[in-house]
Image 1 (cartoon, helix red, strand yellow):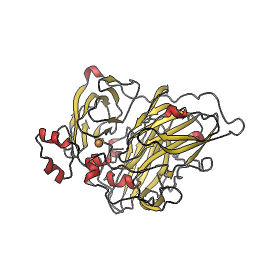
Image 2 (image 1 turned 180 degrees about the vertical axis):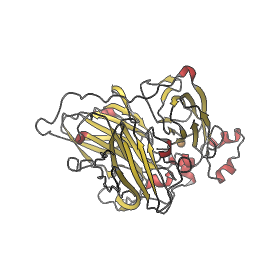
Image 3 (image 1 turned 90 degrees about the vertical axis):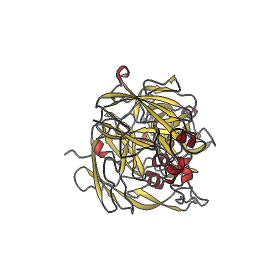
Image 4 (image 1 turned 90 degrees about the horizontal axis):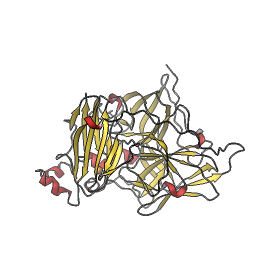
Length: 462
Ligand code: C2O
Ligand code: CU
């Protein structure tokens, strides 16, 4: 067996914002241990009090897992919480049995029990892992972390490969996580559980040291339960390198905001110049600086002026549009008039609400009992997604990546792959993928409260 290469993030070089070290408590060659445990951390500023959290190996965010494209990850996961849980490896085109969806691909891991996850990673890029059992309760308490799959040849040296793991928290006046109201009907039927504070790698407004004149890769992950983040990379001279883990064929300069929905990733490149701290901020709603880059001089000879060779895009199967199976995905329900459509579809909103269901997929709340559709392995699928509700939704597909062919009739960049796409109210999107991965795959809104109250369905590839 190969020795695995799970490396901790280099604690020294990035003391300001280093991710927690992965504790290599291997029980056998190549096996790492992840335990879901109760723990505490400070979420708000220096004066903030400790919050009670649920964490992987006691660290916030969970340990940074790194391996190389094509390698195998072996995790012995142990549940040391008081309720069942499981881990989903978001964005990985994974073996279905390892997808971590309790009730669909595995039984939930009961308190005190373990489950072994073993899978190979076909694509290089930025991915993440999070709880997928009652995720509306477990993710906003801290159960998430980054999973990085390195290219054969790293784009930049490790100390310039920076993860920004973004988490949205609902804090009280003392900066302590509010857990009362998790799972409230109000959050489920509106925009989901929105927080009031954003941490970066579990820290409050960190200063991130960067090397002046050198290229850096920033790996942004939106681990929020419901908050959509709009960022404007051009404001600090950044360009897009990858979306949802998949490298673009060329660097892309984008003017204006780029949307990062819950679950999505965005890789940027920057070459910081000048002296001032460079504010890294959200650009819509209340402008909010959530981190600052602090340029410092390189040790002699360390900076390189030339853009390094870009990572090659992963080889994903191209959908065959001439032959594709066209299927609808109509999303409706929720507050602000969404119940009207439920009635038009012949449903009784009162009865559904009494059952904790506020949302419907194709005329009914999704269920784990029966698939929404079945497709033959290798078939191309076009999903015609429409948002008939008054809230945005982040449609996420497990086990596959898709093209967004059109959004509201406008053609989208044909080079991009996604595993999640945001639809604002009244939006319509056509998305296409090859159903090449056998098994039972979830299709859900990544606003976790929506997923729990009707917006979760699945399809079978056989
Ligand atoms: Cu991050 Cu079901 O997903
Ligand atoms: Cu939603």
